[in-house]
Length: 380
Image 1: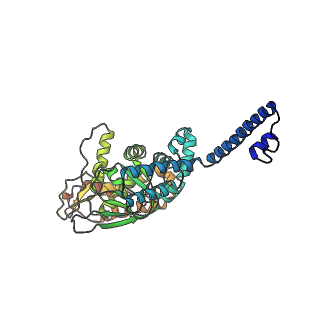
Image 2 (image 1 turned 135 degrees about the vertical axis):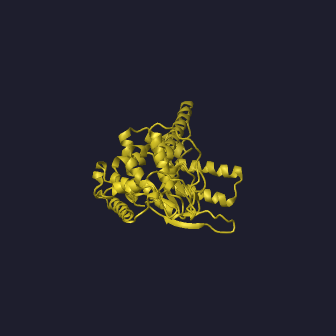
Image 3 (image 1 turned 90 degrees about the horizontal axis):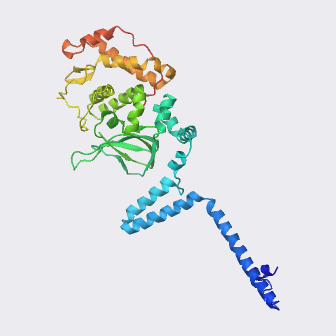
């Protein structure tokens, strides 16, 4: 009772110690009360801090960033942009997700990644009807990235080492101005569920266009090494990507035959042939284009190289292969196959001279039934 009186002060000093023993007892009571009070405050403080450890780590991290910006004397607009990035990217909390996932076993880690990427998988047509094993192989290799408005995500003419999937946000694809006095040319805009950057990974060439964020964008990137390793296991998905990439190259006026040439080179590499060379620029399509024939699957018509009947026939045969049976309810696949068959039929009905270099192939494929199949997601 005396320790209570001493610490909390009610009646303190009213009854002073009368002897030495009382004085020692009073000192011991004071020490016991002070220790109990400090212990209570310490435990309460630790409890409050442990309730929101991630937010405390964020505040500590932000203090370090502020000190860094002050030390480097960064301009105020740049500091404001860095602040916006941290605010939108981390939203007041910081987790070491890689360390957490690395401590888990494979099945649990896959379940967490599949759950975290469920919105991406449902919004990307390329994933929504693809082989679940292929989807898992891709999303387990994805890396999350965040971009603010007006950030240039991809710059034309640079070497590309990754492709991007848009989980949320809006980006615009544009061509850099060739004349300093002219402005950039916007080709198209992409939003949730789209992807870009696959052309340079398929062709091993430089970026053919620039991509800029219009709004805050949450993206997932796939490194080129992971990209190639996954497509090596799923060659039919490479066909899907090559088809979309060729359409995009044609849309911006670039030579799409490099897709077929690179595909042939990849097959040579898989057969044990070494490939060397620097990344190349994808040439523009011009009226006097005199490119060398890329492969027997291309023919020359009106001074330009275009896919031959053999190309469309092989694509149609690959899409209706037995491995695609489990995709037989995908409307996107049906649309692509029908477009392929329609193009093949038009080529068959259009006569071309033996100088086109593909008459024998057309004769071989002209009477075959292209059949029907469905199921591979190839929509853009």
